[in-house]
Length: 506
Image (cartoon, rainbow, N blue to C red):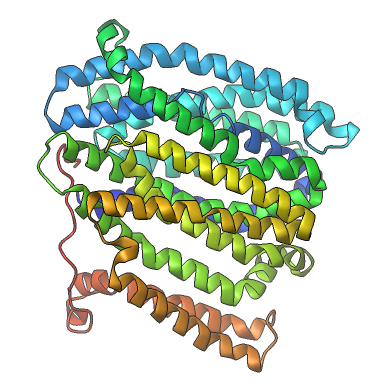
């Protein structure tokens, strides 16, 4: 399976969830109201701060398994997996317990909720602890399958379970108006997903819990890498969502809901597409480091950057031009006016972060976790400063521009990896030609505002035409392959797609 196919399978769940969220977010606002919907956002924000639940062990185990697979050392694969699994189970369980205790005790004191909803928030935090365990221990099994390049199964599973989580959650919100039941449903879906991951690993890879295969020497071998990964996760978990933590304290619940559940929700989905491709990038790079036949780290970086850059650029330019009508159709006119000033800067910021996931995914396999920690820490500290200063200078609008400014750290990370592996990326001429071309197209379509109001429904055909034309251009080579008669219009000029280096998936 080529890397591009791995990308598509990894991105499929995010694409499906994004489409479903177009319809589900307005319904959640309508059925739950601002404050009760904000309760779900508070639990999700606090859960994000526990991204260190496995102390970085899952990333370390996945990296060492990938390198071992690259050298066809399957005995070591089993030992790495068993050792990590033996440590992970009690570790993640303890972190889930801490999450529940801290959330129940202090959550209502930090986040802005009315006295009537304090008990509800406590209950959601208690139930969220079970969800945290299932999410992060399930992620441990997900790393195992990714190391074996089983992206097709993972993509199909996550797509199905995401739909099973979101659609019934909307129905529960409609029938009960109770966010606690939505959290409990998410816990149940997490249990189902974990069970299917374990079943697939046992059936296809002949790997179960295998605790008897654990070896102390493997734990010591992974210790240094795990420590660096843990430090990176601390920076990411505690500082990655610090904007939401600060706003949960400072901003009213309605403003927080608009920021978290509208602007950051969409931006996070776009960034999630970048997170989705981290698996193929990281594990193909690990196989290459282990000596597997296939692409070099530079070729993997270039393949991935060229694959995603045009789409992220389209998202940023299209949003900058057409967000008034898009938000009106999505959220209604009143809420659209509240969200619009913060929407475009947030989308651009998340697009930059999504592109930076390529370099972040290669830092681990290249054993540069110290640099990964430095970049995460710098980005988090700059985000904290930007949000705090922005709030006091310009309220919610100041916050989003402070957020955007903090992304300069990830541009520096990209340039570091590009120089390290001798890739193209931001330094390639074609990148800036693409920027110039899309900006000119966006500016041309924006001329429609000379004769029509920005939120007029009459601009909708122009917005659709803009998106379709650029999308067709980005898909030109694929269209040339699918429709032979178009091959003369869209000739293949790019290098062949990078193939997975080993362990092909049917």
